Image 1 (cartoon, rainbow, N blue to C red):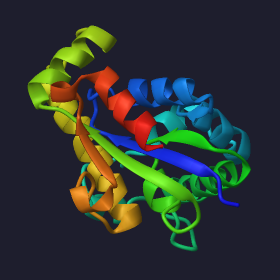
Image 2: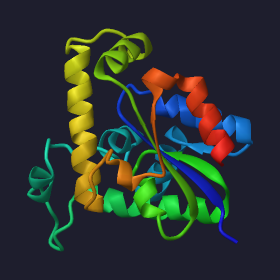
Image 3: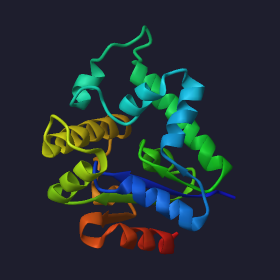
Length: 194
C-alpha cells in the first residue's frame, strides 16, 4: 500500500516551511525539510550548506544558464548529481512512511508513485517581505530583492528539472494564499484534506 504524502511547494517568505512543520505535527508524521538536507548530505558527500544552496535553486538565474554550467564528461553538473540523489532520497522516504516533504520538487518526483496531496503556498510580495524581515532580519539587500532573487532561482530550478511551470495552479491539488488565509487556516485546510 502506498504511503500518504503531503508535498509543500512555496514562495520564499510565504510561511510554507512553518505550515509544513505544523501539519506534520498535528498529523503525527515526520516533516522533511532540513532533515532532508541531512539525508542528502549523507548519501551524496556534499556539504549541508551546498545542498541548502543548490538543492532547490539554480546557481544562475535561468534554466538556460543552468544548461550551460560546468559539466562532467557525461554531461552532468554537480547540480544534476545532487538532483538524482535528492530524487532517490525523496522516493525512499515516500516508500518508507507517510510524511510531509517541503520543496525540492517532491510534488513532481512523487506524482506517479505515491498517494500525494500537492500544495503550493503563496502570498503577496508585501506580506512575504514583511515576514522575511521578521524571520530572518534585515540584510544589505532589500526584502523585495531577496524575494525576487530566491523565487527566480526556485522557478528556474523547478522548470529545468520538471519541465513544468513552478507555481501554476494546474500543477498542484491545492494553492493557498497564506497572507490572506493566515498560517493556521492553511494548516487546518491541509490537515482536513489529508
